[in-house]
Length: 101
Image 1: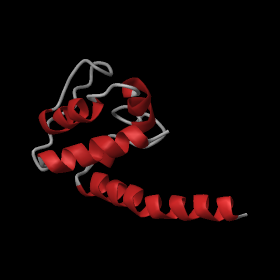
Image 2: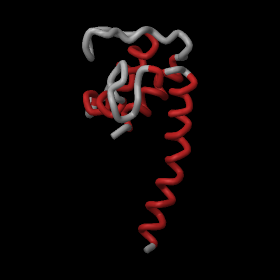
Image 3: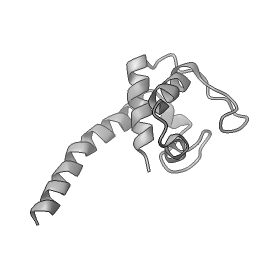
Image 4: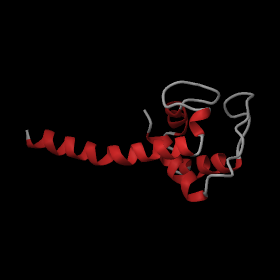
């Protein structure tokens, strides 16, 4: 029982951080093209997480794609640069995306 309570408490302590990053993604208009679990204009966050799983430099790679944009990675539709996202915010968003399952 104690183990269950500890696990539950740990899950609750992570939930606010995850929601804060969803809030950041919403504020920076990322959710206009992406969702957590299905393709919209761009890939689902869970698909991005799966593609970059195990890559040690994934956060940095994705942060660059967020701020500078990219093309040809997920098909013909380019991802435009997001000048409203700082480097620190991009890294926070990238880390959050990589946690999606």
